[in-house]
Image 1 (cartoon, chains in turn red, yellow):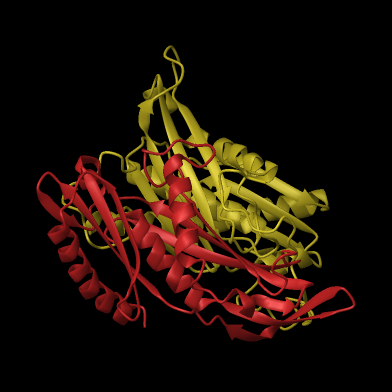
Image 2 (cartoon, chains in turn purple, brown):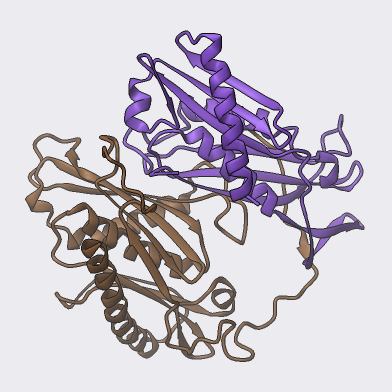
Length: 209
Length: 262
């Protein structure tokens, strides 16, 4: 998106399920904001911003994937998908780009057909099955710079913004998530943002077809 | 249990794949290359999208490059020259930070914490590229290169691709260099040296060799050999690698020229 470049990769491995949820697999989402993408980030463990982004992505996509479909053998073996979002270049609005990348990656997943026999999971590389998502998410971010509402702010605009709003809609146009940070926004502004988010949703849905 | 990340289950394993990995050299190479042919290279420096931003962000990298060689995809960003750690240093410092993306390697899912092999490769890259940079022109400064391997296909080939990528990014950043460093890798299979091995070919080979070379200065900056070879074989490999590096160098130079003329 503009100068923001994000890559998302999903790796599937096998593990034992959680004792309390023996028929559910795992999906973990992590975003990696390294010093490579922008001088704003220092090397080392994930910054607060990265942790907040990861947590938000996890909450958004947690109920998008049918975890029961990741089950290989009830109570014994399940798929654990680890989705890693790597930011190559950051020029603002990482959340939008990360959500779109993660959605596209999840739709592209091809899980090998696996079966468990005598304690060992064997899988076939040739017979694969895609992942059926319960719903698809389409984001739209807005920033409030002084009195102006800016859609899809880049890095310079984000630094000047006093508030920001992330609207995530699903493919039926229903609201999946609203996340408002920073200063005050009146309700008309928010309603306008949601309208624009709907327009963005149809545009994105066409691109991601 | 990494408290700063979303954690999945503690222990995960790869399933055992039913299909046997066949001999990669059985009927010529998998992608029908000849034994001394390097995979096709695609390179792009500067911003990846064609849309130029009106205001370049102050936090943006000085130079960046995206490099593809077959299935190997590497992205590099160079920051600098910027303020170094020692204020009385007569020469600049070149630092390289190498990391694999967690989904990049086919052989296992990498953890987010930097492993020792990543630290080793960071040092290798510094040794390979620092001789090419005019560090005495940047006293008290430090030049940082951050590399992420998005997809890896052959460990030695990835290191070679990374060196090429960093060379391109440094040129894009306008850092003064004696020459661009071009690198190439080979694997020894059945007493024959095979150029640019993919992961399957590398698993089948008994030795690997990576050579980083500066063609204009006719100097080898880095050489790394793993495995068992005889002295003659190593000699032969170095010569062949140097020839291939010259060809890769031509591709890098053409790529850089194309990005300037855009």
